[in-house]
Image (tube, rainbow, N blue to C red; front, side, top):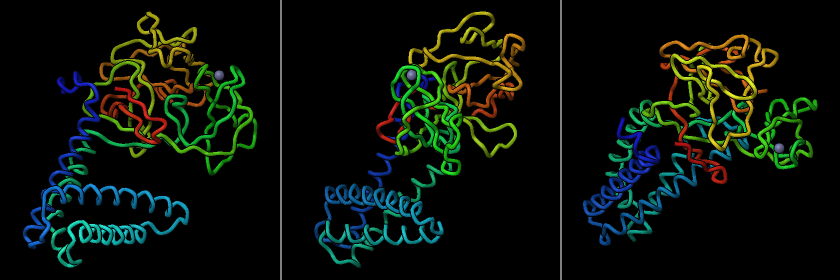
Length: 335
Ligand SMILES: [Zn+2]
């Protein structure tokens, strides 16, 4: 774990090496299958090409069915069955064409790939996701402008640049106060003007569970009220520290902290009028216990966090946000 902290992009390396290993094992087993079924053109090159082709097709099919499912709101089990059948058919046809063999021999050739593919799925489900790297999607906007849920774009009333506004399909904004958005440029909250109708999808990101959380990291943790709910917030207070928010800044043990450049214009405030409890305000400094952390949302006016709930114990922290991987235009590496 120590070593991991020293390696830049360690989360991406773990994920990429797992998929590269899975790909090679899959291609190798396809090649063995082709030899076993005495397919004439059973070369390793063809197996590598076929596997790449099958993986790309399966991913495209998966995206297609996801879109279809959200469009028609169909039964998810039925959609899964149809997706599986379509995936198998496309796989067998691809092998038939690439190895120039019969359809039935193609199925035989494909059979051995079940072993590495099941092993890969088991590795992901039993080890990777519970203990190493997990993927999340941002449902809300308390971490804007750093992480965005489903949103619309408009103009910031302070600086005239693009500001984002949370889009909730169940409650489209009716009142002007609901149009409170966050500006990426001046990092101020404001009533967004000239809101365009286009809706942008939520950020998807990876969390590394092996990294030690540091100040200013984004962390995912389980809700203290309901452990099935996950939140993502910015970690500002570490164990045994005293946290106070004053003059728009974070003060730790009486020392004003400089945030990283990308959030330098954000202001921090624990005003009880916004946060109810006002933990971390000058009137109610937060003295953290030995295993406790203090987290806040970047979009302070629209974030429920440690200012309301108090500290978060270490055991509830799932991991550190390391990369936004989708949508691709929002790609960003954190740690
Ligand atoms: Zn602005």
